[in-house]
Amino acid sequence: MKLERSEDVYDHDVEWVKRRAALTALYDALPEYGCATFWHTLEDANIPLEVLVRCLRAVAAYGDNPGRNRIIEIIIRRTQTANEYWANNALRNINLQIDEREALVSDLYADLCERLIRALIDSQRSFWEENFQHCLRFERQHTYQAFMQREGRWHDRNAEISPAATRRVPRTLMKSLNQPIHDAVGEGDVWVQDIEDKRAQQELLAVEHIDLLNLVLHLPQKLRSVVLLIFWEGRSEKDTARILGVTDRTVRNRLREVWKILRSELALEREGSYG
Amino acid sequence: MDRQQEEDVLLITAQYVAEVQAGQQPRLSDYLVRYPHYAEVITDFVTYYHAVEADLPVEYLSSRQVPPFTASSVGELPQLSETSRAALEQAWKHIEQHERVPTKLDTTLLTIASKRGLSMSQLADKIGLSSDIVEKLAGTRLLIDPATIPQEVLRRLKHVLHTPLSAIRTSMRRANQDADRLQIAEAHTSYHTEQQLASHVQSFREAIEQSLQLSAEQKAAWRDILAREGL
Picture 1: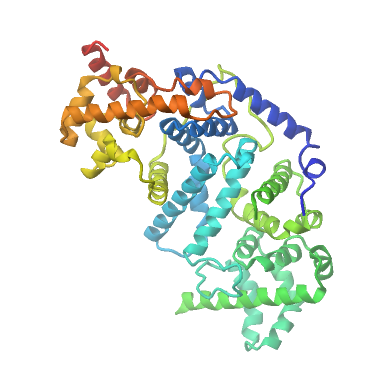
Picture 2: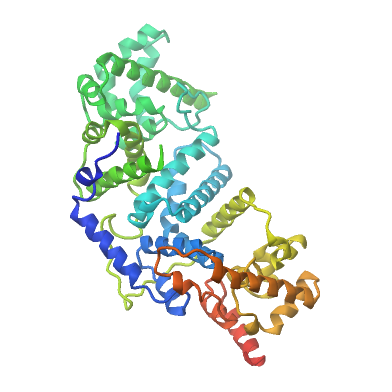
């Protein structure tokens, strides 16, 4: 199904149109390529990154590798504060020794640089020339997901449970769920009772949003929307079913899968704490 | 997801982020209802965005705005941090490993250096230059006018690479011919810089002055050498 972008998202937004025009005007006004003023202009931290991407692609198309590399370095320098912060922040919930964490953060950042270089050079990816920061966000998302899967710290898209997960389950959530877990004996039927336990649901609703999101981030893809709509947006199961175009039963089944995964991870967490 | 779908998702999620940044608190459910065919990727992005991205430092303004820019409003470009330099080098190394294509590279000074166990940055260090200049000097295409290169550079290359001066000159001449061919044979692009690019071969002095990586002391030393050699 093709997106009706002209009506839905983009061209109706006057600000976006203005933005595109402004970027084109800046690009067209650049000094002659290769002269000192040209490079001086590109090294100005105020020039939009989108203009740098257009220059980079022009230079790369011509085979001027030193010029291409120079612009890539400028872009890396312009984005390094956020990227370094991101690499540290993205792995903050993983239980690791300090040196192991540092190594992983370095690898994650290098992965991002590699993806960034490939994306910047690829002239087919035109949105980079219109909204650099958002494309960078998207690239970071995919770098993060690919990295976590490669390192075995992420649920495979098709896997139901990832017992190897070493991410720390939020303490507040552990507290919320401890009681039902101690009461339960681990049988499937008991889980149905837990899901319907309004008190437990209320407690999950009280979990810090950031913790909930971190938790959802590591769930298999098909389960994420259910948890977000119910526990983040406060929708009912019925509402959630309507929004997702599935039956109430499917929503309940997916919730049951979520609880199953949580229980598994909580067990691992306890083993880590006491074992 | 094909290229068109990826662009669609970028547009949709950019709209979401713009609304968040404008303080509008957009609802995920609205987006899922509006774009059911992209429900999974939108959910993925929204989750990731709020969990990881939302509180990152932003380099400039919001997504929709183009910052005011005039030639007089010069902003200082930060130096490349050690962390970023290491990440960038690792990324390039990985890209080169996976995309190595056998070409005329065997005749370049960089290949000779590589056979001596020297990377580009090591070669640069040893001859008192920076990687960005060495790439112009020693890559597949000579991007510095040979007539403007000081003899001191050739002497240092000879010493470091244990290679006769004649071989260094031959390598540079060949790379220079390739640079000439590039200017004639390359297809034009749609960008207005295409004509400007034809004149991308520069003098050694310009390369020194424009280098992002050479220190002020190194630049001063090369200026002295250039003056001494009357270049």
